[in-house]
Image (cartoon, rainbow, N blue to C red; front, side, top):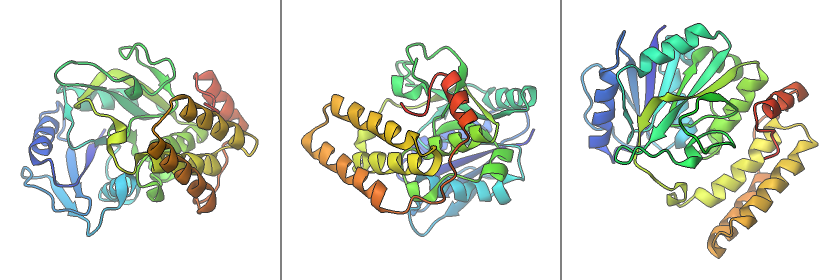
Length: 290
């Protein structure tokens, strides 16, 4: 199977980007074709053979990745698999691309693979990087209901069938939106602990827009994808969880501002998932209300 890779960059981590590209270039099997998208910034020097696209403005994470997808033809059809990698990550092993090929060949209904993210110095995988509720053991691979945006591989047939990432989200929850649409179309998602991306331990709240966009996009996610009776249940549970976590006053103010924005602004086309998809999510351990 033909494998490509999409990397978006703000141009501010040239050394890390070069190390990532070197790790992609060392993958076993046929070479991985790489596209680096400068998201509103110039692309630093890259190895020969790596394609680059420089966007005049920052389109956000999903918008930048969608440009990378289309660089491989409509819906990425020039390749069979696309890996999406954070520009400050590093593929820890040389067999990740081959493991992806084998996984997708072995399971025709497998649509998305979520890699394990581990800190390069400690080897620790943060709990938030295990895309399931039972996240205590990051070394256990399993079926899951979402995936990690900067460390994954997607069968390009998924994009052709359900579309790309939601551009308007800009940052946060775009992966879950795609995951729910893929699951509703009958595709499955795996978390694989043996496919590792080294990435420094970080906190998502380091982004200034974190609290507002997390709340806004959570509302958009529900409005776009959930059956009407589940929308208030899902959003109500997240409201309670946010209060239990006791964020700072400024963070809570930003969160409620984003929550209101999610209801008052267009969320894109509404395509509620089938009730059998709700049941599938429930059987996989994460009903779409938590």
